[in-house]
Image 1 (tube, rainbow, N blue to C red):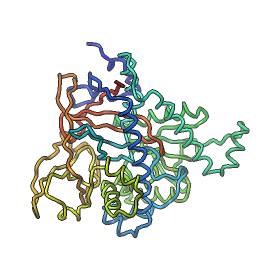
Image 2: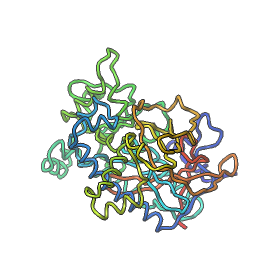
Image 3: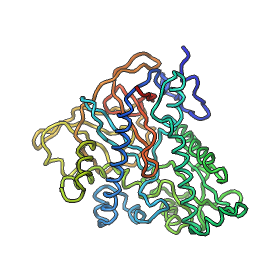
Image 4: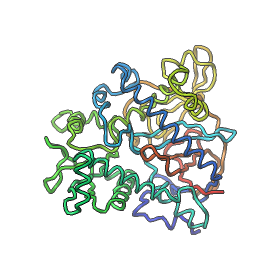
Length: 435
């Protein structure tokens, strides 16, 4: 039977059908909430972002041993203090929330380094809503994305040339700089390739004068002047859909420290990075434990900040603090885990704990992530149940609701549905509507 899925442009949404899965990735059914609900998730994300930025400064000012205790790669620590064109620790990020049994939003993850789910939220959600003639919560968000990318483009060039010189260049259009904004991922990973191409096209729409280019990470090189391009020029900015915690340890064929050489060039201002290296501070899952520890001190955050943390942030703890916690169910996450890999729910009883539930990942070997030396813990949140229709029929499960941050501004929201309480690669994209 024909549905909105047939209207999705596979040149944009290139992973509707995914090898190894019987069902298509988008669900056939849609999910509606009130306008007030979407206002709340954006408000929560905006305020949490402000709070996380405050905590990031604490991390950056702390001794290096503090970072090491959070399982930060030792060779990455020197690169986490440089200022950047937007003055923010991450430029593009995504908060993930679940709904507890009472329908309250609880924030459980922040992808601050390499967030995907853009195509679903900024493109496919609107296609679905238009198909059924319903209002949706992201109606202005594509414009917001264009505004943000233009802001980023201008900020990077202003940082390179100086604001006055760049403004003069813009006034005299014939002297506009010929700077290349390069977008990169491993081109044979479909979701990353689609996301990278989508962002590159959106930047070109926002800034028609921009010189945008795609280079696969397989083909990227570096030299003493930065990232060389085929015409002999060098990249001014690199969008990288590749985790920083993996990049830092990569080697050249001659066993030279490629990741460190790459970041040394960044430190020397040969190019800008989108997202900047310090996004890894917020990506580190123990960062939520830091935020919650600062909340518990009752001294660092303001009363309004504390109210937001108490209402929305799932209580989060460092590994070393687990023994002192009350008995109950806790979710255990590896610091660098992705897609639900190695996530467990444990039952704590006194000084002992036992496995209560474990996330089983079908495509375990396909999930590329750094081996973690540490874990963190969160209160396990019992979630509200939903039903949705997918290709194989009706399923019962749980929602993960996301909100993108464009710099410090809350933007598009998105939804995934999983038959499992801990969502992973089995989750479906669900379009959001307004009640």
